Image 1 (cartoon, rainbow, N blue to C red):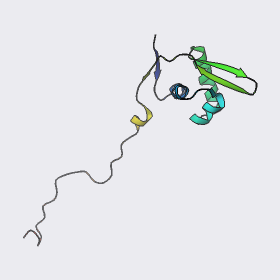
Image 2 (cartoon, rainbow, N blue to C red; image 1 turned 90 degrees about the vertical axis):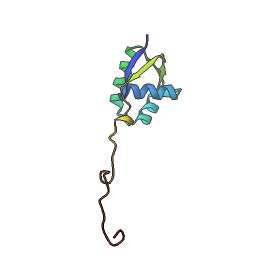
Image 3 (cartoon, rainbow, N blue to C red; image 1 turned 135 degrees about the vertical axis):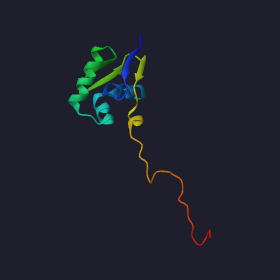
Image 4 (tube, rainbow, N blue to C red; image 1 turned 45 degrees about the vertical axis):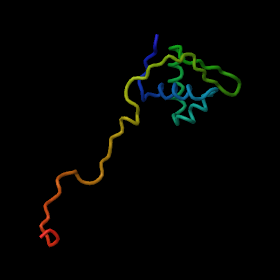
Length: 103
């Protein structure tokens, strides 16, 4: 059964990082994602309850291990949600010029 994860959430960011980086400690994940420790702890506990990751507490550090790899990320990525900025004026028909050059 495929686990559906919404793109752009902290859970999806954690899963993407764990698929790239192994072994990873909680501190490594916190540093890479630049999130507060309490928010990361809450998200990791939620993922552990769902059976997606396992937290291995060792003296001095806690390792995060990815248990499953059958994910389906839905939604748009953050890079796709950014608004496109257009510079300059609107394209239109050039104005007619009747000066000395075209006289």
